[in-house]
Length: 327
Image (tube, rainbow, N blue to C red; front, side):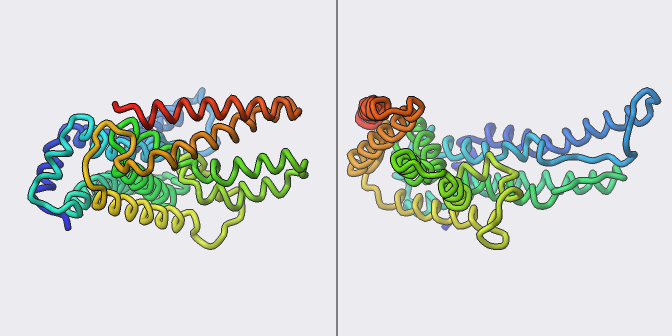
């Protein structure tokens, strides 16, 4: 599956970038903890500084690395596929004497391996600091590291699949972020329109968003760390199982797309030309529904229909220039 020669080629192709990102990501949380601990000790030794406790506490929910580690997934996926297509290097890569499956797996497991290694080394450094600094409290230490790792891998898998379907870095980013909010577009927008038309109480709308749309939206796992503390779960450990299932789904979509698309169409929005028209129709529909929702604020049918007309025009123009204009 993973070929050593390909692995070496992929590493050398972006070696400096990989190393710099790894160094920054590995030491981000340990250094942040040390800086806060140093400030805590200075305050503890200062009589003018009031302290409620002599035990240092580090809050991982506010940690920059754990909150933004998913950015690594986006960054690596775009570098490995989108930028390579932008530079015209993908044609050379797929012409090498390796199967498309081997190329895909080598790229994927290199990026996923770096992300997992970064989290593992960062976790180990924090664990050693806990043993050495004491007394120190780190609420949510294990669970937040696991959540950050799964979120980063899921987002990486999502954007890697987007890269396997698209012909440029900007197309890959647009498809990736659009997919991250897709349940809100496909399920949420029509429900909002039904709520406006039938003038419901809104309670059932809140339940659908909280218990159906939000848990299956990839964007949830990178923006709402407290979501699972505010709402009941579908089942035990849902916050871990759902990202794993989505990661495997995106991985299979990416693998199938990378193996099956017949030619490289670098610069085109989609590598599969058959996807152009259906996606354009979807963009127009989302534009109609989205701008129609904005028209709700006028609380009149005129504003509602005007908003939908504007949305249809915006969706048609946007989809045309994005999908049918070669970069």
